[in-house]
Length: 189
Image (cartoon, rainbow, N blue to C red; front, side, top):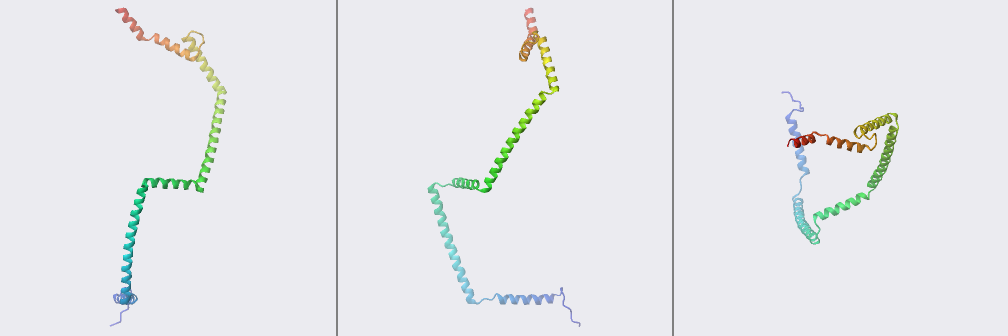
């Protein structure tokens, strides 16, 4: 028979490599009984120390809570104190100061911009009021008001616009159908 070539799919080649690696690992991890005993003793001592430290820590935490309770320190009080401290720390930081200065400058610039905008709008309204179109509109309104005054009040333009409206309302109230109905019902009785 021909000798077989060992390739990647050959199971025998893999088995031999695995066995070689296992024997190397076993040789590296071998410890003596004496070393093993020392390690177990050290492990036991460490576990005892950990247990003792846990007991001490529990005792200290209990004492800590008792003292806080006697002093009247509550979790809410601590939260307020921490918040206040953090707020003061933040306000004293350079980033906060720079941001505050920037916002202050921006506020001043915005105030100036709104002031300039108000001035510009006032100027535009003044220009508009002096324009020929507005003057023509104003004259038409005055003529209409005068005509209403003369027709309603018969005074020929005397009195204010409010007086004209008041007299028109008064005249209208006197000529309402309800007054006529009341008069006719009185006559029939």
